[in-house]
Length: 330
Ligand code: IMO
Ligand code: MG
View 1 (tube, rainbow, N blue to C red):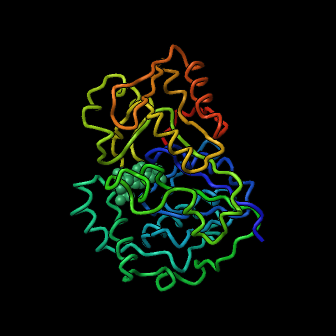
View 2 (cartoon, rainbow, N blue to C red):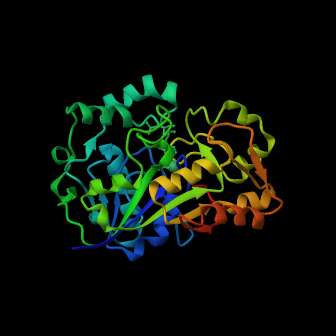
């Protein structure tokens, strides 16, 4: 029987440090599961001072936990086995990795279509994500059960305490994000139930944000003019804002606080972790934006204590806020 489900997910535009938080909590659970996305995600994890990067395999693998890739995920078989080989060489027990029989397979045709038509227009990760989900919706997709050895196929079992590790984030969600500048899966906690549990089992919804916003790929909320901002360029450099999956420099903007409030409220986040606070502390610049779109309203705080106080107060009715510092790339 399932005891309880906790869900970690991103509240912004991806790259908030979900992997880091998931890795920190994984050891308390029986299963760690991914419910959405595929190799477009890039999760960075530090274990005993060593850096590991994963794309589809949830971070339970670093703690000897059953690591499940759910039916609403998509996988690239070659990349999946590359990741298994890498983790196995690093000494992790890859027999714990299981894939839903209904997970969809990304093919070379999906990648080529993405690279030719979507990446140039939308700045996708070029991993074939949208064409694969599109074939799924057309009911012509290829299923993992027909392509993977039985030993990798998940029997659908979940019991005890479950941690769900989100990929992408609130504002990249296919339903809630700024369509069409989104990904092709559902990134909010509601969608974790696709793993096969009732919403009644959800205990904690742990939202992860950063103290400033970043975006990889095209988005009108992150105009090219941001590249010219001297202060934001300092954030990119000190925060090492380069993509784990693509290596691209990320566009950075000050925290869109109204968007964060909306994401917390709609998702039901009851615990909020805000990462990378040390970057602003080191730069001694403390700003947030107050418009949902690109309006003129900012608040500039004198110091980080003032900023923390404001954020915690405004979010008090929804969640507890933890401010975390970590200079490393996420
Ligand atoms: P993690 O899990 C940041 C962005 C892409 C693009 C849009 C659509 O590491 O936070 P896609 O390839 O999914 O069709 O691209 O979504 N994107 C991400 N941005 N982090 C991610 O994952 C992302 N996955 C997709 O840059 O704008
Ligand atoms: Mg990433």
